[in-house]
Length: 208
Image 1: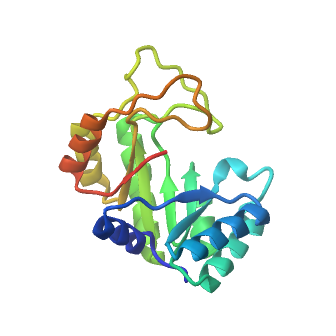
Image 2: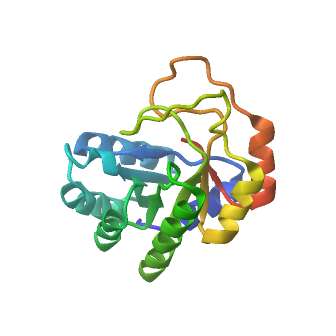
Image 3: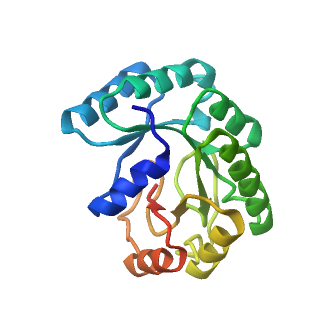
């Protein structure tokens, strides 16, 4: 069944667990993820990332994701991953996605807030949830970042709390030591930072 991301996040909070979110840029991956979730009788989040648009347009895979989510025997959230602009966010919502991530993390704080607020306002019209990011989760996601100091891209807990207050998002992606894609070096998760961000924001945290 297709559900809002908040419903799945409440389940995770109550159970004290995490819920997997998987990019599904083709039918084979989409079917595999949903079958695994149904076999385990667990909720799941299926995602389409904007960077996959050249290989798999959202207008092709999106309706399939939404339909298969509706027909699944477990709660499924169909979500836009790393949406970079409002046109793409709007397209995802029009196609029936129940959650969107707007990623303005590479922008100055005020621009990130402005973009995120716009996404939150639009998502509310569709009854959809919003995830956003503060700090920079490095690694490959179609963009290049150059960080001078180790840990400089990590999310500041105080700034994260301000960002949540300023935007009204439902879930927060924070930079705490993980990277996108394959690890070039041994990762080092900052658990103290994770706990502080959780304490100050009160929101479900998303690990990328």
